[in-house]
Image 1 (cartoon, rainbow, N blue to C red):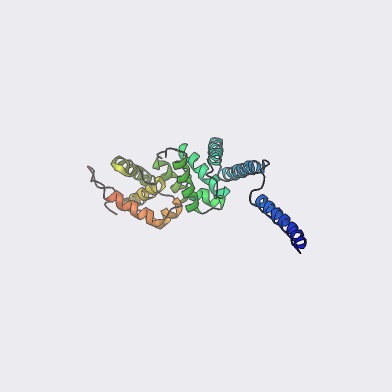
Image 2: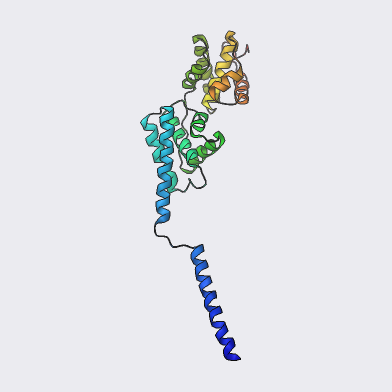
Length: 235
């Protein structure tokens, strides 16, 4: 009886050891360089997305080159984990556009890449913070012309909106989204000169929310009164 029991336990222990070994291999598969190749493939796909967006928006080569460098650094820091390739490509290109002062918005990049503009914005902020990239100040006057291409206004409105931007910047509103400041300045100039343009029209042309334009208009109107009239006082 003892011999039978002993013989019966041997295959059981053998099977258990085999099961444990196979389970360990499944949980911790050997690395033969596959993960490294996968990472390289990811980077290639992200650069491909950036090339697609660059071609669609007609961005210069220097912006694409800067975006490629950012994508490489982001992959090295594992910032691309859990981020969709089009989102990272769009955010990297936005950094390049901001640094070269090209008036392209997050919404422009999100639409072309088929991404959520909020996700692209979050990724952009993460890149700045984790990679210690200084956020470049942009000239809102560039965005005035960008908006006026989609919603034409008179030359006098353009001139007055630029004066409003200059005054607002000198009085501490330089940290505002440059596109929002441009749209708000255009709206106040239209109101002052009697041109019939709505905040909704300018917001749509700028690719931003109407509420953002409204809040920026309020901030400009609250600035200290200059020698002439307060910007937008007549609106």
